[in-house]
Length: 68
Image 1 (cartoon, rainbow, N blue to C red):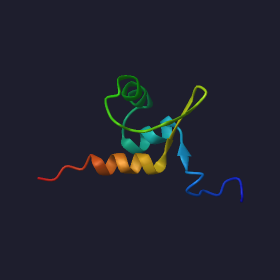
Image 2 (cartoon, rainbow, N blue to C red):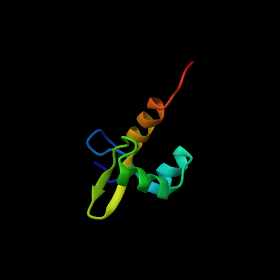
Image 3 (cartoon, rainbow, N blue to C red):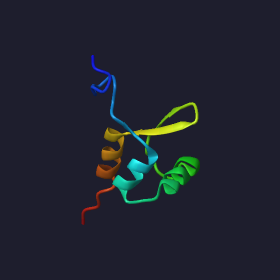
C-alpha cells in the first residue's frame, strides 16, 4: 500500500488549523471545545499532536444542520 493512500484503516487526518478553516472558526476555538468538551467533535491525539479525521468533521457539520 502506498504511504499516502487513504483507506478505512488509514483515515485522512487534518490539522486543527485545517479543521477550523472548514468549520469557519479559529483553531483556538477548537482547542477550547476540546478543553471544555463543549461539542462532541472527536479528535486523534498522538503525543502532544492533535489531528482530526475529515469524516468526523463532516459528520459534525451534518449533525449541526437545523431545519424548521
